[in-house]
Length: 257
Image (cartoon, rainbow, N blue to C red; front, side):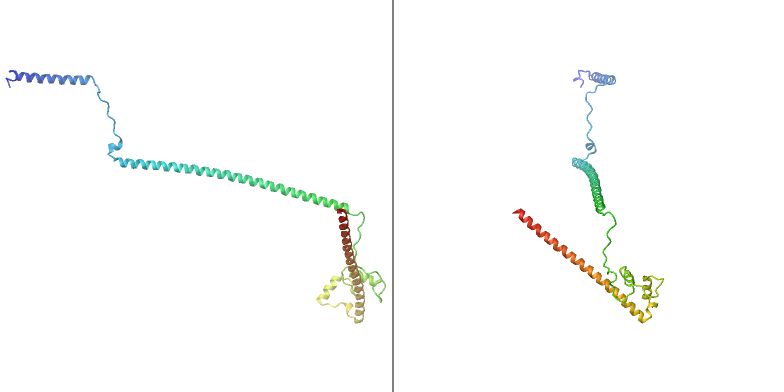
């Protein structure tokens, strides 16, 4: 070794070690004075890579998140659609209420017009009836009455007319001894079974029945005569109407020819 180092082996080793030490110290001094970043900071890996999550699980989680987001969007769209439907239903209901109110107003107006027409017709009818009334007393109604003095024989003067007045008014003919009671009262007593004093004497009772029958017969004949007269009058009017219809038909036929 001494030959290979030229006899200066130990010196060279010492010198080399000292030189290396000086260079080390010099580097340390330079390192403390000047800081030079030769390389930029390396980027951090994503969390999945840091945690060591496989790529398939990350894709599945991403798909789940996308599905949840899509579901949330669908729910929002459904809620918006439901809101629009409710709004449209409210608007339709409001329009239906307006139509119903308008229909009610038209119906009320129709009823008012009908009522006005009815009142106008009634007023016109009352005016016509007022104008058609006769001036002066009205003609009394025709009642079937027998002529005075036509009630038969064996009657006292005026007795037949007096009895006929009760018959014509629809009342019971009073009898002998029936004083202070009305005809209706006497009839009610007889219906209860009472026997009036005028019915006790058989001879007087037979005379009373004969006189009453004479008056009733005369009034019935007068009523039958009035009925026959009315029927005859109706038949004559019908014949007259038929004749007038024939005359009108004949005149119309001649006019057309």
